[in-house]
Length: 348
Ligand code: TXA
Ligand code: MG
Image (cartoon, rainbow, N blue to C red; front, side, top):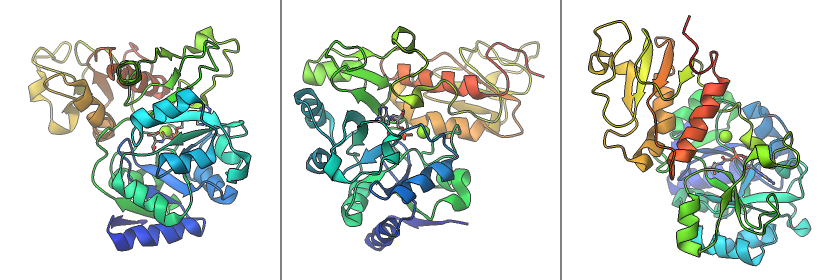
C-alpha cells in the first residue's frame, strides 16, 4: 500500500526528492489533491497519464510557487497578468502560450502550443514546488473518469500503487477543481476572458475583482464543435459506479439521497419511508443551510461516500445554477452522463 505521510518538513523533503527522481506524489491543494510530477520530465509526466488511465490528448495543469516562476514558463498578456495578480495564489488556471526556453515537456500540453498554469493557495503545495526546484504537472489524483479526491485517503483508494507517496494535509477546502480561463478570449475571438471550465472562481468573482467582462465557453457555438479547446470539458467525466440522477424530487427504492438544503419533504416513491429514515450510508446533505460554497466543498467526498454497492443509485436534489452552483451542476451532469443508467431512466 502506498504510504501516506503527514506533511511535515521531513515529509516534504522526501516528496521533493521523489519528484526530482521522476516519481509521482499525491499533493494537497486547496481545490482537490493533485497527482504531481516534474513538468520538465517527459517520462514522469507520461507516468501521470498511465497512472490515471487518462486519454493522452488531455493536457495537464502546471503548478508554480509564485507569479514570477509562472512567468518563466508562459507568456503573459496584459490581461493574463491582471488575472494572475488578482487571483494567485488561488483556484484559477490560465491558458497561456508556452515559453520555449522553459523546458516543459511537450506531453504536459498534449501537443498544444499553450500551457495551463496555476499558483495554488496552499502552503504545503507551494513548499513542495519550491523544494523540488521545478514546476509540477498535476491533474486531479484519481483514475481518469472517477471522482476527484479531496483527502489523502481518496487518493490512496483511487490510485493504489500507481502513486509513489502521498502527502496528507487534511481535506481540500474548495473541493472543486480550479476555474480554467483563456485570458485573451482566443476561443470567442472577442478579446475578453473566457471560462473554459467552471470552478471555484466564478465569472462574477472575476468581474468584481478586475472589472473584466467574462463569458463561459459554449462548445455548441464553437467553429469546430468536435474539438473543444479544453478537452477536459468532454461530457463523460467524474462518474460514480452507480447511476446518478439530478433534480430529484423523490427517491426510488434503494437509492441514496444527496440533498441540498432541507430534505424534510423527500420520501421514497410508493413507500412511507422519509429521508430521515434512510440508513446513514444512504443519506448526505451538501449543505443543510443551502450554502453553495459549503456544497462545493462537500461534493466529491459525499458522492464518494454514497458510491457503494449497498446503494442502487444516487438521487441528487436540485442545486441552483448560479455562481459556484454552475460548477457543481457541471460536475453532476458529467457524473450523470458517465454512470450506468441515464437521468430519468428507471432503475433495474
Ligand atoms: O484544481 C485543479 O485545477 C486541479 C488541482 C490538482 O490543481 N488540477 C486539475 O488538473 O484539475 P486537470 O489536469 O485534471 O485539469 C486540467 C484542465 C482540463 O480541463 C484540461 O483540458 C485543461 O485544464 N487544459 C490543460 N491545458 C490546457 C491547454 N493548453 N488548453 C486548454 N485547456 C487546457
Ligand atoms: Mg480531473
